Amino acid sequence: MIEKIMKLTQRLLCLPFKPQRVLGITKVTRWDIIRSKYPDLDEMRLNDKFFTLKSEISLDTLKKEHKMKTDCENQLNEITKKIGCNFRMIKSVDNANEDVEWADLVISIGGDGAFLLASRLIKNNKKAIIGINPKTVINERKYHLLMRSRIRTTMYGKNINDEPYQLDEKTRSLKDLMKVNYDEQNCENVIESNERNITDFLQKSNRRVLPWLALNEVYMGEFLSTGTLTLTIQVDDQDVYKLQSSGMCVCTGSGSRSWYRSMNLQAPETVKRLVKIAMGKDIDEDEALNVIESYHRSLPFDPEDDRMSYMIRELYRASKWPKPKSSPERRMCRKVKVMSHGFDAGLVIDGGVTLPFNDGITAVFEIHSEDGLKNLIIQ
Image: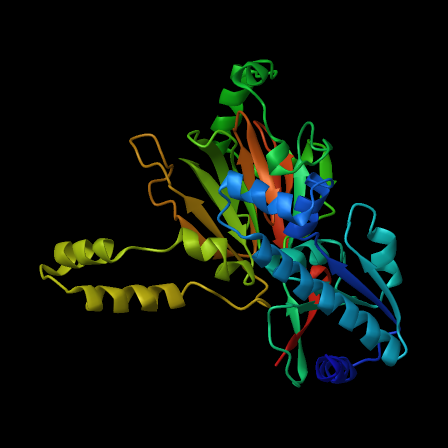
């Protein structure tokens, strides 16, 4: 334990600046959740409960994960005292804005989820953040600065100031949906907006710049999993497309290594068939895998890139859609405007914050240097 603390101390001392106020942000562990759900059960009865539930995760595993993170929190507390920093630790981020403003360095403890949670609270490119994963072996290494691009979302239209919610809170029934004030004539007029400039619509609508910056991606889709979403898209204030799909993802370079990449993954069978059609020859499994690996390696782009990429998920191709027929499913751009013609659609930021994105609402996605995330990472 002493050796780990010394190494963590040396890592903090290698920072390009001396932090005075350090804020640690961590998520509640699964063990915390279980303990709060069954507060009256001792460990033996809790084990019996888990056995009855046939959980695939053992209590020992959950306790081990909890202990690893608790040890990391304690180490961080000791380290900051050792180097003379003021330190705070928070687990709830509901009212954390004041704590984030107070700190000059934010440290997230946990995996990617904890890092996304912490980064969502940082509103500019001035405050530094470090991610510490308790499962990672701690080594003595130097830091380098990575200014990760983030997506700023501006919304136009009606009901854009509705409160956000978590996806698991979305339990509306079909009966609820039918109560929505849905103007068919207005919908038809909006869909025909493909023939005009979206900017005209934006100038006449209410405007809201969302306070949440997307580090990875923004996703748009209907809540009903089998429902398709109709969108009008304008890319870099030029090309306009009208299409129907199961959703759309707009991502940064950081996000190009996560959900965006998985949306673009291909199977060996697809490659074999395309080669057969295009070249009239058969290739074996290894050759197909080599092609796929090269393709997949080409998908991620630099987290500091000032461009983003959009990806249409399961684009519906028919006589009517898309318009024009050459509409690209994926494209790098610096700005994209998306007008929704959805019935019960949502806009989801980094898999967490969710807002309604229904008929007539437009979202504009941009990357600004002042919105970047100042991430200090191990070299």
